[in-house]
Image 1 (cartoon, rainbow, N blue to C red):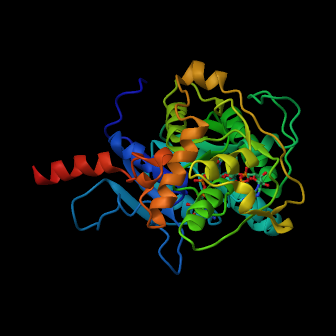
Image 2: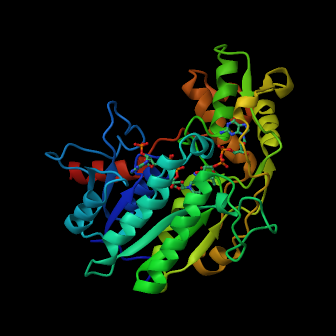
Amino acid sequence: MGLGANVGKTALITGITGQDGSYLAELLLAKDYEVHGVIRRSSNFNTGHIDHLYHDPHERGLPLTLHYGDLADASCLTKLVMRIKPDEVYNLGAQSHVAVSFEMPEFTADAVAMGTLRLLEALHWVDWPVRFYQASSSEMFGKVHESPQNEMTPFRPRSPYAVSKVFAHHMTVQYREAHGLFACSGVLFNHESPRRGATFVTRKITRGVAQILAGETSKLYLGNLSAERDWGFAPEYVEAMWRMLQQPEPDDYVVATGEAHSVQEFVELAFSLVGLNWKDYVEIDKRYFRPTDVETLLGDSSKARAKLGWAPKTSFRDLVRIMLANDVREAQIDPNTYRELAGIEPDIPGSRVIARIAREVAA
Ligand code: NAP
Ligand code: F7E
């Protein structure tokens, strides 16, 4: 199957309200997929990342349908799969915060490990050629055996989150090998964006800088500054997920930039882009240290580059600039005030998709 003809394809996404889910939904809608997303019941609206894509079912609009569901509920997953009959299923739903997983190991394992198994079981019985993507993580490498890490590097997980992802990864391979399911595991290294959750370190830093500029706070409290991560730009990473499911054979792929930076480097750059010295604002708070942390991660994505034709485009510096410009704007400051942030486009979600639909509706 080529990378072109998608008309008539249907995709089901768990975790559609999250960072990656929202970018993936935009990508698939732009490729003319019919998209279905699983959302959890919440006492408050949590669909901010996808509101621009959603429309009242009584009106014309993008082919996006949201369904209540949860990875904890096997019967609802099976029902959704049987009703929607998706061609492609992207399992992005997770309790994805590593530090939180130490506080809630059972909840994390239920959503991340058992949730994946429940979905695989639902797909195992279908009688059409479904394709499955599992959101695996570089956290699985943990206390790394070698650097950089590739598809053959052994796992030494260091958190309940990572242990759960290792289970889900092996289950994905198991269903591929034992039951012939077209199942791919994407071992994605950290990827960030203006839609990154506010408690992950990159977004915490860029929001912190913006709040300091706005005079809302004078300090930013952080934990382990020496940890190194391979940080990429999220919209590019969801493209790799889609490419995996368009291949003739299912396989596992590492997706990374091949460049590692420490948390301190991220901090220094973010402050310096707006003319501040980080040492005047950053304080270390022990509560943000983890019982066991992953000290260094660096990915080797040669296989994805060769087989998927995928390559990262956004540099570390530009990633920090994009996130910072967004948070400065959210703090009601014009980013053009700062030379390094001038001209960076706002993260207008799905603007291309919306423009196309608007044209169609008007026609
Ligand atoms: P995210 O922003 O935290 O989004 C997680 C999504 O999962 C949200 O939509 C959340 O829904 C949903 N979810 C949580 N528990 C669920 C449950 N029990 N049933 C159904 N849905 C549930 O995460 P992300 O950064 O987009 O990451 C997407 C996936 O890739 C996750 O599986 C993550 O572990 C994995 N991953 C991420 C990275 C990264 O650097 N971003 C790297 C490697 C792997 P609510 O909105 O209702 O909470
Ligand atoms: O931490 C250190 C922290 O929470 C990065 C998830 O998407 O990527 C993410 O997991 C590093 C760690 O991301 C603070 O100790 C210092 O060493 O931004 P993070 P993560 O743990 O790497 C992987 C690939 C995933 O799969 C996960 O789902 O930064 N750090 N000070 C801090 N981290 C946080 N959160 N907050 C701090 O104040």
